[in-house]
Length: 243
Image 1 (cartoon, rainbow, N blue to C red):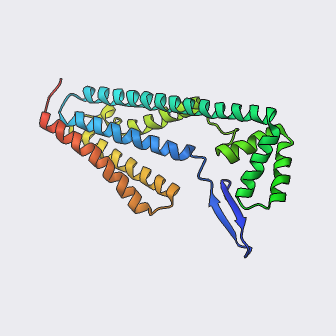
Image 2: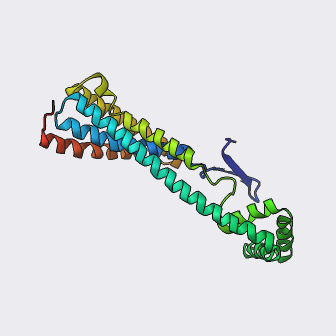
Image 3: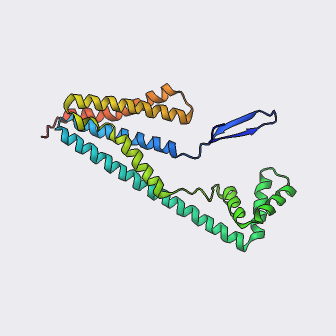
């Protein structure tokens, strides 16, 4: 059994395996790379379509990379920090209730178990057992009432760094050719690299969702093509040659 899989046996004795789909770090990283690729390939090809000097395309690409990565990182940090503070506040309230109103909390927990079909006597014993240890009581109430794990509230700093890095990796792909070439050669190289990256991202997403690989890859490729094609067409119409 894979490290992140879980298994349980039914009445027939057959084990059913389920992947752990809650630890989404890798999945979030793939989405971050996808965001970086799609947004920056639009910017790079939009600029390239206007026919400026290669240095202008490089500058636009790097500004798009840094601006997008910082924006994603800041947004992730603020979002995670607010969520973490909100959940921590709820845990603090629950901790106070457990200390000052243990009987009420025990009855509340027993009621939750009974509501799930547990025999009343068994539910009372389970609730009493859980409430005998304050730390276990807090963890149990957090899981049963709030639906959270007190030990896994997430790290805003880690999430921000991961988001920055993932976005930057994706955003760098279409810029790379412009460090080594110019004109049509760099343009074609950006398109080819962007297409390959989009397909790889699609395959990775198919792995997480267990959906058909070909469909996921083509969908991601289509999204990237649309994101790149429209800005390139606009840039070509503008045809502003900046030297």
